[in-house]
Length: 204
Image (cartoon, rainbow, N blue to C red; front, side):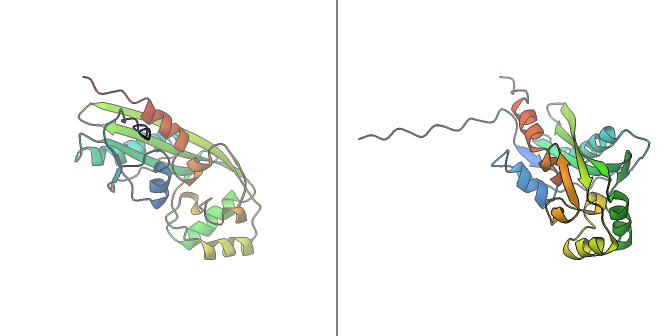
């Protein structure tokens, strides 16, 4: 008896992908979309300009990260991403120290804020760039001093925008998430999947 051959997996229509980030969270999320990609850290300087529209600021930072790597790997499709927390449309980046982290959590306490991730897809040799962003509303619990101290003792927050991570003891600080959960973690998985699926096929 001859067993049927397993179906051949579809060939990606986009070039090989590089994730321009060393974030373990983004690597894990991108694996939900792509089984195979490379990782190259981008040392691009991130802007923190409160005069820019929130989505635009995140998209610009994502593009800066992607372009820096794309210059070294022009034939790859480079994915850059930038996630920021916005309270009253003002960006909260990564805290410089625990005192600033505590201040950020005090400001977020009991309020609704936005988490925006800008994504850039850059293919230098093909002269193609696509920018997009996703916004998610997050409602914080009302936090007392002891609750903030407990959270800071459990989570390393100095590398996290807004001084928190929804995937790390997030129940202690987050009351509700409206929209893409993966976006709050650091990469809007569904939007990235759609963008890669819609990437133009190479010309024959």
